[in-house]
Image (cartoon, rainbow, N blue to C red):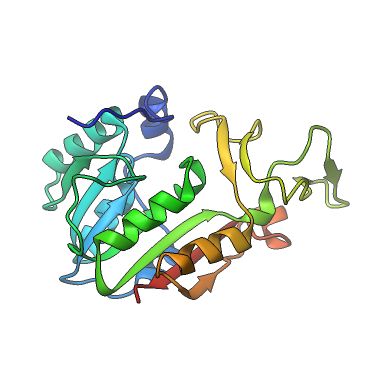
Length: 232
């Protein structure tokens, strides 16, 4: 059995209750496109929201996560509404239980910024992809990092947003403004670090999307970044 720890383990029940089982993300759907019949790994799938969406779109899905408790929620939902999803307990840094070149695609939805080490994770994802396969991910936009304490600015419309502070300081930071159902510590990387790490692993980006959000700040600063890579 894989010996893993996950920052989400103690938050699993609260996270599941907070986000629910459903999935409604038009940008995600547009990014992955037609996946019917493809074998897709949902890395860091949590309680399986993105895995279930991919299965509903016609993919054959394996969900992978380091949290036993989140996987328990995912498996229970699979029993209640079977979609043929297999769930595997493994570490995104290594994916040691997954064979080389065994997937047509890999998806990592809203998780890379919560995984401590980017390079081994990206290399593992590239390893399990078939030649020509694709990788799609979404993250908190690198420009939207929690700044130093007190670095807030009030807009004339009454909203309050975080300004970009210490952008070049990569690594873990205590994200005090995150939802309580999420881990306090996240991992900031610059946009160039993401691009260069993906390219070095043979996963150059072929498409990026920065959707306009539904909050005032997200209509002037992108809150999320979606990208798709092609295995060379």
